[in-house]
Image 1 (spheres, rainbow, N blue to C red):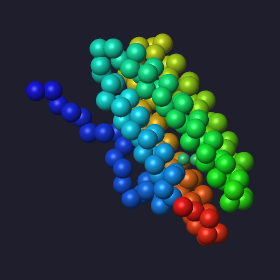
Image 2: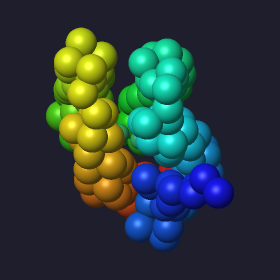
Image 3: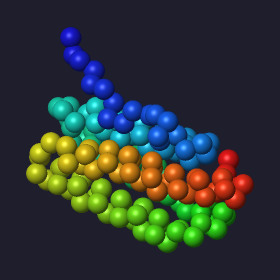
Image 4: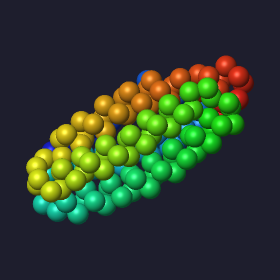
Length: 140
Ligand SMILES: [Fe+2]
Ligand SMILES: [Fe+2]
């Protein structure tokens, strides 16, 4: 019987920031990354990786756009630094995707990066933004 591996990103209270729209989008991103993880050993891995990453790029672009507009609305003082982190994520993911596909190697480096990014950017950087907005009474 084929075993179903655990999802890479388990949703928990550290990731739930308490802003409904942002949390919903983060869950969507986690679901795409988990799907990518589930296909890492598929016979048609490259096609699945490309499909999942295309979805992830589109979803991340929309999410970053919304999050940066949210920062503008609440007057977040670290907006520029935060937006730079979003750009770096897109660039790094792009580079690791190239490695993953051109070297025909496992996607572990890419998956490790995505997991670490989720656990640091969402749980730390995005959490600071939501805490700031709540402090100004503008979250939700
Ligand atoms: Fe985010
Ligand atoms: Fe962010």
